[in-house]
Structure formats: C-alpha cells, structure tokens
Image (tube, rainbow, N blue to C red; front, side, top):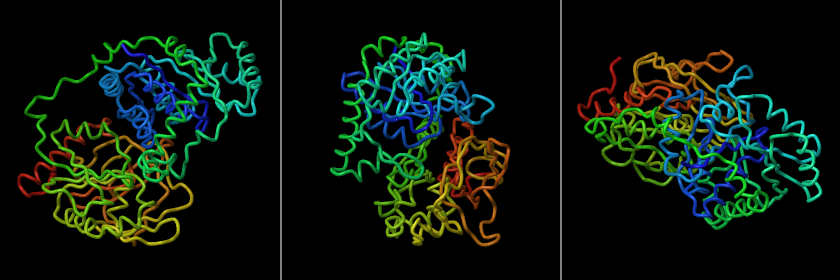
Length: 477
C-alpha cells in the first residue's frame, strides 16, 4: 500500500509545481518508486513530472472523467508505487465554476480519500498566514488538510514568525519552509511553463540543463522539508476499493492491435493525454509516433492520424521548411483516411500560420484558412463538445468533454471553412462553433479527454480499420 498525498496550492503561481518536482526528485533519490499525477486538464506539468520521477504522469479530472473511470485510472498506475504524489490545479478549491467543486483539487482529494498538503506563498506575510491556513482548513469539512508548506520564506526570522503564527491553528502542521531562491525558478511563457521537451532542447547542455534544474529543486525541497516526517504523517493507501472500479479486461481477440495510427509527437506536438492513447490501444490501435518537425514523411501503412496539440506557433519556420512532411500529411488527408486533429494539430492542417511577429508560415493546406497568433488569450476553460457531422469520432451528436486553451484564432473567408466540427458549451452555458469537419477529417481547438466517452475512441479505431480493410469511408453518415 503506497503513501499518497495531494500537493495543493492557495492559488496559481504559489510554487506548487516547483515543490512537486523537487519532492518527486528528492524521493526518487531515496530509491523510492514514484507515481505522479496531475489534477485538471494541464499538459505541461505531467511532462515535467515524468522527467523528475522517471515514470509517466497521468491527468485526473473530476469533471472530464467519470468517477469510476478516474478511480480506475488512479489505481492502475498507483499500485506498485511506494509514494503517489498528485499535483493540484490552481487554488485548492478552484474548479469549473464558483458555485460547485467539480474539477477542483479539493473534489479530487476527497474522491480519492487523500490528504492535501497546502503550499502557501509566504512572501510579504507574517501572522496573516494563520488566518489564511485556518480558512482553507475549515472551508470544506470533508477535506483533510495534512499541513502546510510555506514557500518564498525570506529568512530564519521570517520562518520563526510563520511557525509561531501557525501555533494559533490547531490541527494544521507546518511540514516545511522553502526559502526564496532564484536558482529554482521555472521559466514560463504563454500557455504556462516551458515544456519538458523544450526545456531539454533549449537549456544549455540540452537534457543536462533540465536535469540540473530538477536536482536543484530536489536540494531546495530537502533543505526546507523534513521528508521523513512528511512520509510518516501520510496514511497508507488501500487501493482495493479503487480496483473494484476497474472494468473487465478486454477480450484477447478484441484487444489485438490491428490498425496503425500515426501520432504526432515532438516538441511542437506534445499536448496529449496518455489515457487517450490507452483507450485507442484498447480499441485495437497501435500508436506509431512521428515528428512533423524532423521526419521527412509519415510512417508507412498508417490507417489514421492523430495530431494532438502543442506549440506549433513556436516552430512555424521549421514546420513550414519540412515541405515533404507537409505534402505527406496533405496527401494522407486527401486520400480520405481518418484524421483527428486537436488545437495545434488542427492549426498544422490549415493553409498557414501567422506567428507572433506577423510572419506567415505555409502549413499543410489540408483544410482552408489560417491560424493567427494573438497577444491576448483567445480561449480558456472546460468545454462540452457535440459533433455536428458524422465522422471518425462517431455519429453526429457524439458528446465529449474536454477543454480549450489557445492564443491563436482561426481566420478564413466567408463560408470557406464549410461544416464546423463541434458545438462547444462553456461552463457559463455560452455556446460557440469550433473547427472543421471535412470527409474523414475532424479538427478543432477543442482538446477531448476520451475517458468522457470511450465510444469515440472505439469509433475512431473502427473508422481506421474500415479504411485499412476496404478502402472505403470510415464512418456511416
């Protein structure tokens, strides 16, 4: 039975990702088997988790994923670990709306029965931290707060005042004080922190630069947190109830991988849920990874394409320069084979990308129009999507849950885009159209979590199987 905790924060930017990465690497140094998870729809933090812990991290979201599927996913990866660390999202109680807890870190912690360790940014605070900690501890009686870690502590005197103030909050222990340090700063940009893929490529010494940062974070956590005391304070996690939620194994014949699906994966296309790949594999797909940046053409014998999101806007020049790959993707789409493209992948299928400097880069041209990068965020938040046409994700009216987060916007001539792919409903009830559906292509800014509707994964693989076997359209309108 592993030890487990949720590392939460008072707000975005309080230091919970730095603390999570440092704790993961510090525990790994001790020879412990780590299993990281990330609350919410974030793609960047799980990649950093994997680099720190040496094992893939998985997303857990109480709004996008049905509860049984979420608990099953958690148990599947937590068993066999010594310590499970779940990094929260935003502030502890922040979620889909201000009216309920759906999508929040607190909701996830309660669903999994895990204690929450609260990271508090103590810069420019003293006795006030006691009021803040007491408020978080009492806000939801159903949540168990394991204690607090103070971040950006300025001095030994500052730490002493913080600890003295917390004596006023019974039942909430101070489990660490992390000193203010520029040495452990994580660089960020639009959409969030720099990805693990880019950190490894851009830092001096490539992967060694990311490793040096992770080692510095581990030193920082070890100096400020009594890790042995922290582990002793955590209960053992009994996964037996979670494993009861595990669905019956897929029959051997049905689980056979009989279609090859090309999946874009490099530093320009790295926003992808590992659970999506598992559900596609469960439906019978073999994921064949390729790089639109560096490969000359698509892999051979593909029955479908999955183009996930990422940062194509930062690699527009390189993507455009790889004309042979663009031609290969364009020909694949023209052949009528199933293609599913999300956000950055959708941008890649368009005719061109106008980057932040106003420079136009030619892209695949499989769909009309262009993506234009804006200085202000164009969309952010949970979305419920309904397909507007029959396609490789299933019949018209197929419902999926996921999110949008992008700075670019679509531009095209009047009526040029044709059939929209999705009708999106936001948390406030507003609706908007997204993307394009053209034959066997479905693409848009919407990021889907297939656990919200596993039948969509089955439909996509079935569409690929149909095309591979018969040379016919992969869906029935």
